[in-house]
Image 1: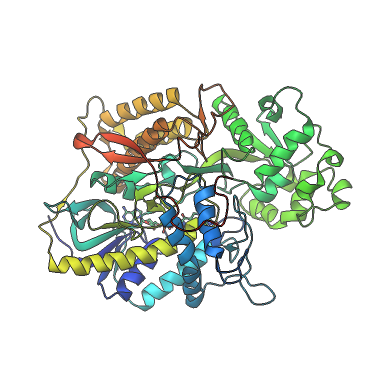
Image 2: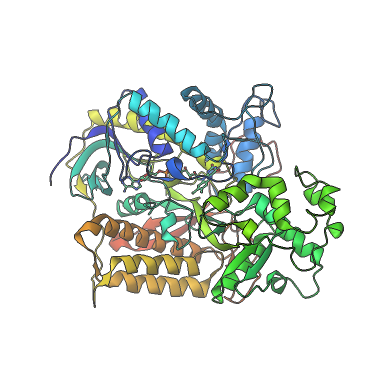
Length: 606
Ligand SMILES: Cc1cc2nc3c(=O)[nH]c(=O)nc-3n(C[C@H](O)[C@H](O)[C@H](O)COP(=O)(O)OP(=O)(O)OC[C@H]3O[C@@H](n4cnc5c(N)ncnc54)[C@H](O)[C@@H]3O)c2cc1C
């Protein structure tokens, strides 16, 4: 196999986690090489994705509740809000490392918003108790990426762009010794860091950029690494046309949720006779908890939308008039009084009283403009087509506090890694994680490379995908991908059932048994689709093993049920670790995560 000059530490990916890892490894004196399948700054979530206000969590000297224990509150929140299915040791590493990560980015020039006293402004995000979210605005992630990339380029660190990593190469002792690219070249390394991000493209509806196909999960799996928490995927209602997460202000101004024939369906999902105020209070709360979560009663809204779609209907958000029976005078003012622009008496008088659009303009006028620029003119009566979309993978390649995976020489960080977040991930912790664990992965990989120089690798050989015996007529790989995305959105999205997981797994197995055909220009698309198929298998296996509901994993006893099964504590305070047995068989092991090793400052059972 042709070889390319390698490095002590090869980092796969070019997002926020990868760049931070490369800088940290270089600081430790290692030679580094980044492999990015797209172009730097033009690929991945950190460089490209945005939302109404993107959050970066950090516990700083002035962050509430303040004092020397502030990091403990943060670590306990990650672990507790996560549903106690993550490693508390990793939560501690995140909470303790967040301030350093923030100040590093600040030094690189990320323009974080300031309060009048000059300190970083912080707000409360989905699921959090304290205001820890630093931000620059809708483009926080992009600003972070630009600053890191600027530093990476300034230091002239080497990168191979448009180079897709396809597999890890292991030596005879099972240590990672390099990477095989999709073009078939071997890139030797003493240590490899996976920073390949999540696998949003495994779902039909997602808010990820193109190319986010979970290659890192699939490569790690083929190399024998353990993965964890793959059933916990952040899913929330989004605009299918613009990929905008329809959260916060959009739900708080009480739009109508209707099907294509203008039927308001929410009441069908509440017991007969439920007062209007109750239904609309739940709708309002969806604005404060965008991702599906068993722990938030507003998951009923996601279930309602998903169930309508399963019946073949299209669902829209309509801002043109009030939903049926909404009487703001009967709503509890405690719900909305703290939102600027929506305070009584204005809210109880026209135009705010009578129009969701007037309310949206009062609390988030830029969103109306943003949508108009993208072809949805709410003022002209356009409606927003909605669907549950995949936004983040909480799980991934299982790491320890050194960001090391279970295969020697392999490290992971950012969204490619798992075990640091639980079932729910409070908004802001993913970007922070990419920086804290990115730094740790870079340092650990450099140390490992240094050690390995003394005990050299044997000749590395790439682990290739097991090619299942293909039978029948060849299917076009583009159709294959669409079929897998569809089955994931049917069976591993908002509603999960034993029957659905069985059907989904059987459909997936049939798709994988078929031969796939691809045009020569589609070689990478084919490799990515293999990754998606592998990710689908892992997610379905993890979903099938968790026979309770927790976080975004809503498990039902029948496909027609609208009431998820309860969360089962303490029996299910375990995470599902996926282990690859001989012959490529997937084994799911429920294990107890590491609990807190510090004196608790909160009740973590609450
Ligand atoms: C719309 C949206 C809004 C979000 N909002 C927030 C928020 O407000 N706060 C928060 O904390 N988190 C948020 N997140 C999540 C967070 O932004 C991501 O988890 C984080 O940016 C991931 O960083 P990363 O470096 O791990 O991956 P990415 O930035 O996605 O980078 C991965 C890189 O790896 C490359 N790559 C992949 N496979 C290969 C391969 N085989 N070979 C070579 N290169 C490869 C990709 O091209 C890409 O450049 C949001 C996510 C989305 C989609």
